[in-house]
Amino acid sequence: MQTVCLVGKPNVGKSSIFNRLIKENKSIIMDTPGVTRDRIYGKVEYNNKRFHLIDTGGISLGDDDFQKDILAQATLAIDEADLVLFVVDGIEDIDASDRKVAEILHRSSKPVIVVVNKLDNDKRKDNLYNFYELGFSELVAVSASHNIGINELLNTITKDLPEEDIIDDDTIKFSIIGRPNVGKSSLINALLNEDRAIVSDIAGTTRDAIDTKFKYNHEDITVIDTAGMRKKGKIYESVEKYSLIRSLKAIDRSDVCVLVIDASTGIIEHDKHIASYALDAGKGIVICVNKWDTINNPDSDIKHWKEEIKNREQKEIIAKKIAERVQDGEVIGFGSGSTSYLTAIEIANKCERENLKITAIPTSQEIKMLCAYLNIPTACIMEKKPDWCFDGADEVDHDNWLIKGRGAAMFKEKLNMKTAPKTYILVDDSKLVNALGTNFPVPVEIYPETVNYVKEELYKLGANRQTVRQALRKDGPVITENGNIIIDVYFDNITPDLERKIKEITGVVESGLFIGYNVEITSAY
Image (cartoon, rainbow, N blue to C red; front, side, top):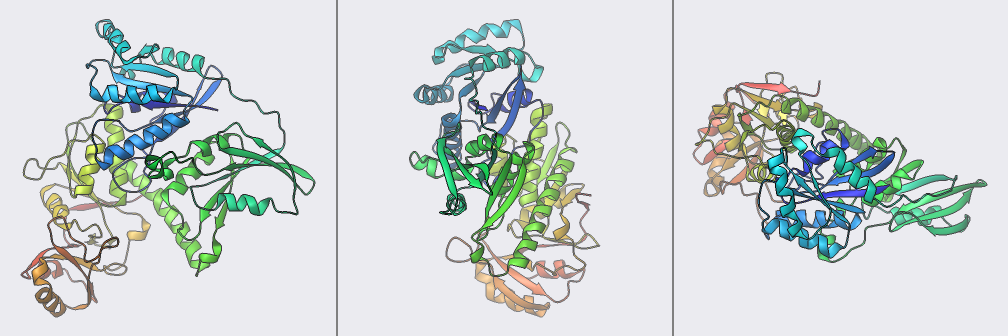
């Protein structure tokens, strides 16, 4: 199956065109909470032809980490694509970002269709010819929001796509799929040992994928090895984890997929993404956990992985629930945490689908950066009052008391909650407890100079253990956005007045206890 990718600067309508072509609204997929979204993949069927479609992040001028990562992802997509759709805004003049994308595409030597979006009337269609300046001969006028020109675009795409390779081979085929460095090649070598009769090695239809035929129990079997991506310079090395295209092509040609998991790291988001594509393709999946010798407690680790998968599914359901509440013109407080990340993405998708305008009040710099990337305007609590908020929690008890603060953003989270009429707390099953403090300590943000005094006062309130939270990837303690430190405090008993008493200690900025707030618990059920 051939591959088509969408590229262009931000806000030209790539995702809207993507949704029109695949005939569904597909959510943004994130590998890890952070600064960039992964590419979005879908399948298109038209006039008895099928192709993979990839949506990429907007390419613009700039040298920050956002743009470097986005550019790397887009470059990878272009490299793997058989055809590129260069999307431009038909009601704006060509600018430096458009020219930057055009320069990248000219260097790639890939066939390009310039898709001039937002041309929804005859007057605007006259703007089409301005874009010949970019140096490409094939232009198509569309309006994704009004579903104009989409069939013409599909006709042009399918006309220009190369014919698919046809393999006359009726052997059982299985592919080895998985993220880089999980041991796919080692597994292949183990399968094709000296006791196996290897018939032939042939180049597959997918670049860098090798079809190897061998006999097992007198049956001819073909294994498709999707070896790691080619590294073309540092820009590729930095985003190796994002490359799924070879896996997608191998999946299409397989009867069964073997998903290789690294036991030493467990199941991560990228593993789930790859598995989802095999499921979407209707393929059987065998999960192979490699590097098993690195596991100390196999039974407990397997249980943990199962719970992790279950909780992830719940988070996705919750995110969709909250996104459905969004109305045009609302000001919404955006909380922190993994479920809040997913929710922010779902909200951005809904706003794009339905052309809604909202404003976010973020509770952390990380969330603010995410909103910027998702093209959601932000404001501070001094400028606007939220109509409602959403946030996650580390623990929730039967009285809707909360412990929050693994993200060290309690101060702004409480500001949002105090200001908004209602806050929706997003929790999967793992967060529900009979009593606060069951699984998590109470985080307390303090001025660094007061650490000794505060510890003494917390001890008087019943703290049986206190630890200054340490950073994972740098020396020293975690530093909050307010320039303070966090003490994780363990209490034998959490009483209704404990939040107030902690806050009264000189040197305490805020605690992660949320008692008596107007919250509504939102779960997957």
